[in-house]
Image (cartoon, one colour):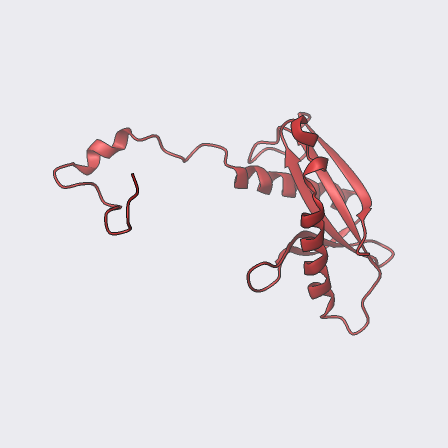
Length: 160
């Protein structure tokens, strides 16, 4: 059965006390996809900083719809600008974290990187890296969690 917006109410129906809705399970306290992604991104950032990279920008998005997003923009000691995509998967099924960086995803990252580089009169050398977080890294866990394996793929793809 299909419902129109007029038929669907966000408030409880007449005669139903709000307390009666308390039996609905709460989402709070559960680990969400976003919280897993945030934890993986924090772990990747800590890993890259320990490796000597400097954070320049985080979660850079192009304006408008259909653009791209860059998880981390880092600078190497030699001045190279590094656009980092962080991918997290709890299991290796379906290709694991590495298998989730599709050609379409790469094109969106490249699009966002080109937009980011427009701010420079003379763009620095740059590359595209991917940090894979494989395994369980619950929200709020430390980046050194032994259950998660972090793998850094330098120059994982190029803009050609």
